[in-house]
Image (cartoon, rainbow, N blue to C red):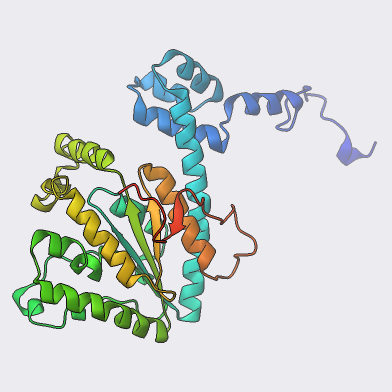
Length: 326
């Protein structure tokens, strides 16, 4: 044995950082990525003492807490799987944004749907890890007196994406298709003019190479009622309740009529409506992301972190004959 390879006389077996004992100790104490996410879920859903919080940081302590605390393990695992899949899809969205930036593309994603359908929460997950310099959320207030005298589409045209940019519309020009006529915010003539002009307007956008994705988030009446009640009782959500929301249940059927008229008049080959069944918020978020990634090209799409085919029971292209939950 050479001099450099000789073992020190004071060396003890198993003291090396790569010894079997050390490896076993690491495995017993270090958390996997899945266990780290599960620990975060536990912290959010259970009352933990300082000692409990320390225990969550080791595998043995985490498993002991799961067995002793009043924690719904199945719910925690569902949340874990959701968070893992969300992260994979968000990585793909970052790749998409990079392609949009480098190629100077303009991407417009529209989120429509009844109140409390989950549009805003989905948009937040879409943009969570995108570069804010080239990703914008547009959520316009009611028009000013000056804007009321302008061409209806004018204030939306000003917010369309610039080259290399993605714009997310949290409600869009389609306010005039459903909300405004239901609530009496526009005249019948204005409504009819809108329905006549919007296919032509969107065709001009298409011809100018603006890529458009139009989502309608669909929820059932009882789910909407439950979400409204949650907003009323949760002090962090009370800001979401508006006078329009309070009338949504009362006007449910008339909303349905205008929604169906909107689909039949504005669903086109160049700007089709995509229905997202959103009674389950988490599924709606994941599958709407998957749809965007499946229909748009981007560098790295051939090597995705996860599958990009949306669930056809959750995301489907509008068709007159299909059954609707709203």
